[in-house]
Image (cartoon, helix red, strand yellow):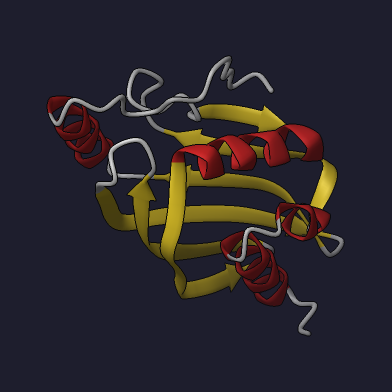
Amino acid sequence: MRCDPEGIVEAAVTAYTLGDYETAAAYYAPDATFALYADNEISPFAGEWQGRAAIVECWHKIGAAFDVIRFELRNIRNLDGHVTCQIDYELRHIASGERLDGIARLILEVRDGQIVREREYNDVERMRAFMRFAEYTGKTPVEVGGISASG
């Protein structure tokens, strides 16, 4: 396994893709921040999640709402510990059975062999349209109770 910043990000993404959130979280610093930039009205997972436990909680909540069909790392680059990449994804919305696909952009800061901050950017209007479509089909877009971005 590579231990440079790109290798650390690749290993974390691979573990996450496999649903092994505990292993993925081990690549994050204990006080790391995971920020998912979206609109809380369409994504109850949006916001900043502070610390490994909160990050894992967020991932479990996402996993309760969506099955991962495809989650592929693309275009990974490192500039002094700031790793930028894209995630090409396809998810199945569990409540409606509908599929959401797209490309997310990630910026991760890696220091001393651990991810200390991850910022994820998605196409908010695409997500909004998907959630409206899921609601139109008579399904609840996200059925996960008590979600809070505060962790």
